[in-house]
Length: 282
Picture (spheres, rainbow, N blue to C red):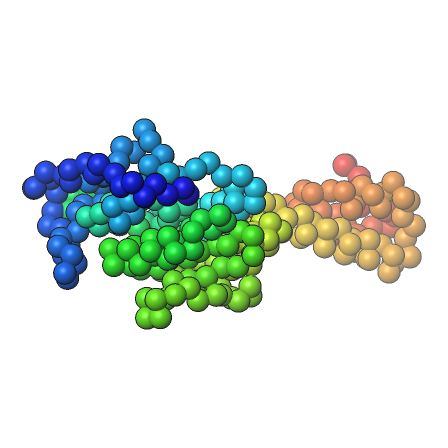
């Protein structure tokens, strides 16, 4: 992000009564609704932090790469009643209107405000940004009510969680896991830093979600395993009885995936006088 210290002509907040009762921040006045913006979403790259205009610049590697991994992993882990959003502009307080790289919020409309729900978890990829600015964003999000705030340092390969108690970032161990009610399964910290681990973590999350494609593949793999087990039993019977088995017959039995047919061959193997009788279609 590039910061312009000349200030910014703030847009007026939403009209009174436009939705729900605003939360109040002691000593700072009420919170505006999350969608009462100071800047125009999807029209400008401007954000507002503490009344200062910030230009959200396009990224390059490693920031852009890290951003892609973050979105990929978080989306897979989100439980069904939540959704992951990218670059979601949020009116954080009277003087701030900015987006984090990726966030998780509850689906639907908040009945207290008539607006979307405030994000519960926020992730920020940090590369060239001013660390003081990143810290200020975390402080303002925490005051707004964002439960958990994480930062992924792209260049130093660190993942940290904001600690409101200490007013600083707490580094997470690479083998740690992020557990939260928004997530269907714990998210590995290492998955946010390593592409191979990211793939494994996403696969685990999809399994936890009972993904139908993975379920079908698992069922097919189980069926193949069962068929191969019966085929080996047939060959074992024939070998134990001293019956000759040609290579073609062996491959036919091992290659069969029809469990009903294999069970029939297994019964025949106990009584047949030759391997030909086992696989005969008559």
